[in-house]
Image 1: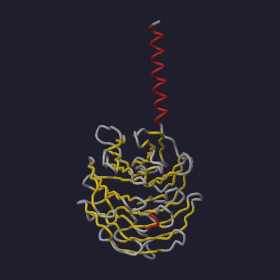
Image 2: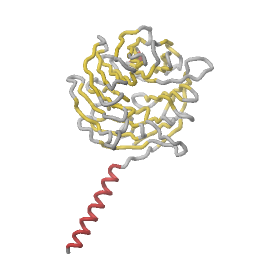
Image 3: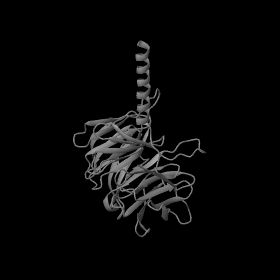
Image 4: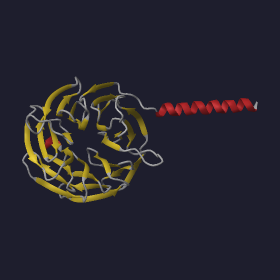
Length: 327
């Protein structure tokens, strides 16, 4: 009788473990397409995931229509040359895009494919983000500043001094709030109209990624191999700690994040190629995927871009040049 009870308990435990493992297993993409052969420096998806802009290692910049995986335009900063683009973005309307390479910044019209402005920057571009209609660009630079730039008419509207290289930036579509992440482990929320700091949040390593919700209510920041958090932009208080693992010597790095339009969930991508959908209020993981990896490569693919699609569809682009559809 005791042996039977023990076996039942053991089987129950095994079933429980298997169920737990299955519930935590990541799914594969339902569709993939290769946008670059040698990999990417940078990538971005439009807010609805319908288009993509990539900065490839071998062929510079290109703009894609994702439904048919068609390259629409080739965009580079010098004729006859392939530009190394470390920062790219598509504005919230999808009508404008920007590319940043070294100390040059270009605004593009996504309808005509033509350049609407070419500018020089005071430092090397590390990251960039456009406001609504591509009116302004928040640019993270290696000169210890982020610059809020009038990308259509020229001129710097605000200079945000951080004291370290700015690796990650985001700005609300209306241009009211901006956020920066720097090499001194600081996530800073800025009033973009005055250039003043609203809040400063320290993490435990140099900052890898930041994000703002479209309505400006929430801010996200993640450290390299460290912690990640969500804060209220109204009070400055921490709302949620994001689980980045509990390995013996390090945590995983979240390389990209985007909030849902209704602020209920956040989509996050890791340097390992894992994509996670989590609740904003609790940090509880709802679903996970692993993007396309190339077996021939020794290193994995870093998640560079994310977007919410219609219904329960999501999109991701990896540093190996693959566009991924997730469901």
